[in-house]
Amino acid sequence: MSQSPTAAPFTARDFRNALGRFATGITVVTAVVEGATHGMTANAFLSVSLEPPLVLVSVANKAHMHGYLQQTGRYGVSVLTAAQEEYSQHFAGFGASELQPEFVEVDGMPLLAESLAHLIVTVTDAHVAGDHTLYIGQLEYLKSFDGEPLLYFQGRYARL
Ligand SMILES: Cc1cc2nc3c(=O)[nH]c(=O)nc-3n(C[C@H](O)[C@H](O)[C@H](O)COP(=O)(O)O)c2cc1C
Image 1 (tube, rainbow, N blue to C red):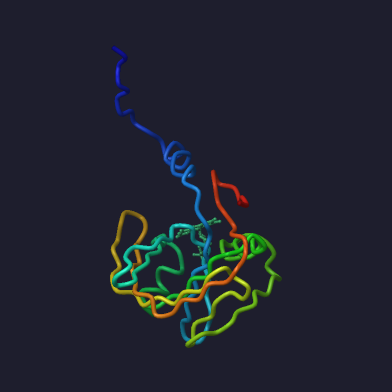
Image 2: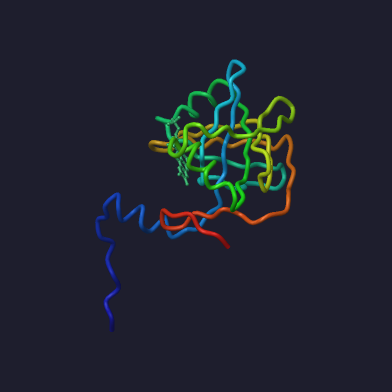
């Protein structure tokens, strides 16, 4: 009889390696604070409930977006297309600082132009979970567009 493996201690690298095998899309979460637009790249985004329509994004407690969402309780989500990798880099704090992202505004919420989907979310619950906070919210608005998604897998961008 083969021995079943026992749970072994793991490192932060092991955790990243295993979780990085869960392929995701990429979003840019936006918020408006005192008239200024802020964006943050996030792949920890998922649908939660159909009735009512709920989604969540997990935001690092040390990220500026955490403070913005505490203040505003409302966020936009732009699902990135394969052609928007530079936006992912830009809103993660990397890449060309001279990049001027183009936004469209819906009900006062800036959403990235030419994305794959646009959502506007009102936060209904914020759960602190370790070093992140889960911002669960109800959908106010959504619109889908045709295109190819930008994917993230094992710490790299990928295409379908
Ligand atoms: C592909 C990708 C996905 C990311 N996903 C998340 C995420 O889901 N949640 C999060 O808090 N940060 C995520 N980040 C990191 C933030 O985008 C990054 O730390 C950002 O610079 C934080 O903004 P700040 O420096 O203005 O606080 C991701 C970065 C990349 C490149």
